[in-house]
Image (tube, rainbow, N blue to C red):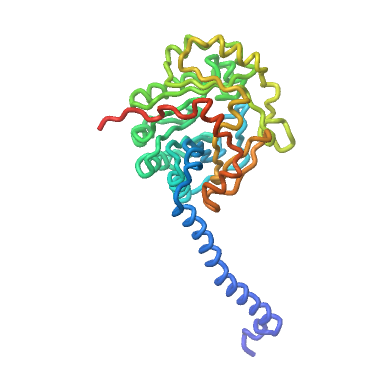
Length: 343
């Protein structure tokens, strides 16, 4: 008998034929799926940009990853996964956005500098190939001089989260996690210097919460002279920081009342660059893309993802976003977001 006799029994042959049929079907089906996907994207890209869509997607925030090296207790975009797109797909997303009318892209996270090469190449592509203004929001802990030397020319605005100038308060918030020797402020000061050296506009973001709402930051802010200073009222979103079974954070004890938030704003009213954003202004006035390039609908106090713009194009995904473009305009969402550059 042939040594292959047992292999070619009737049962094995039936099984083998089944496998052949499966792979033959896949040979036919997979190209169809790929062609359909390409056709969808091609249709979205080749269609004339809608003026209505262009007005709504002027400024887009792209969370390139949820990964973060800090554990801020009020965070509402928590590390539920470590997914991120490859550079090719992310660039395609930027192309689709640019074709639809996006003129400013803000890269955020998570902490975007955990993926420095991806972030840098996206900044370069957005600026050089898409003609977009480029901003970044970071916790400031991982920004290195060599990154700034390599990619700083492509960045218009770099925003750093600064919730307190007191080391103990920063440690209590979870920004830095260095107990009473918290170095977050020192890191931020170094970033401020790097921005000055590169001609990048420096921005500050502050989340006003129960741990910092009575802090006087005037002296420090005046010395730093940020281009813009955003103050956000601590926001609770289901599925992220509301203390639910699937939430990583429970920020309910960090909430402040509208009165407490307004008192913080009043005590810093002498800072001309201060832009207050209570929950009613902030929640739906930002156009957010997650790590899969899906718009996030926060209108029901959670985050519901749309279909990815890589699957259905920008216009169809935007219809699922829950974005309040009138609030975006009313809060001053369009401003001079391009730095001066020497020829």
